Length: 304
Ligand code: UD1
Image 1 (cartoon, rainbow, N blue to C red):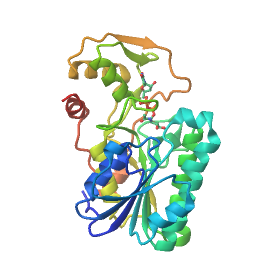
Image 2: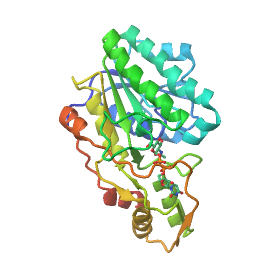
Image 3: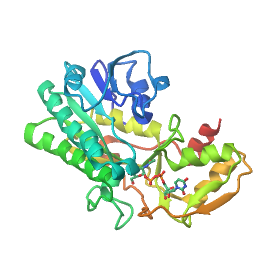
């Protein structure tokens, strides 16, 4: 793995959120860390004590100006993270996920700060083939995916047009501690909560669909490497390169939680992606990234 940022002033937008808060924990020892968060999906209990908090909306340009003043590095993880909310309110998704990103990049440009942005496998839409490499056609199927594609594209443009050091990380299915079984949450946190309560585990559709689940600690490692790499101006997939079917996942979670839940099938999600799996050769080669947490270990530690 490449080096991690040290001795820098770092802003983490969404630093109280699921991914952002783990990243903050990895940065605080060696850096001066600021957080910008409005706690819309982030949580106060995730807040690290050793940070300066800029509380408010990522769309508030004055707040972003203050938060970015004097920074060396920005990790942009703040987002409206719900795909279904983006379908209900595309303007909100666009202003939060796309427009606010361009404003943030503008401020970073004034500061000459590097920016590492959270993109998503959602930009690929329904994959034509797996594993999905970075050059796969981009055909998002939700406003969320369209806005992440804008973010991803602006990241490259700010590098190519203005020489800003940017890196976009395209996350596949991230899971781990602090991912909550709320309105918007990954299937692992939902299944785990169902298994713990010995309630039916709800597999949507036939359960033959597959996903590439990457542990949040590996996602943090990818971010740290992106904070120091010379290979900027590019986008990288962040996954494991492995997949599991949702049926097998339901069984593994039931076993890991030592639960007596039955596994039931409910309606398939309209437009659900069938198979998703990252080709991670680019990030492996350029950033020395290697996922270290197997799904079995990740599930076991979530059950502890
Ligand atoms: C994930 C991301 C999303 C991103 C997309 C990109 C999460 C939470 N979402 O969506 O931001 O746009 O990847 O590819 O990480 N399922 C069940 N039962 C449940 C819940 C889910 O069977 O109770 C199934 C779903 O139908 C789906 C699979 O599990 O087939 C994964 O669902 P989910 O965790 O919501 O993630 P994605 O839809 O892959």
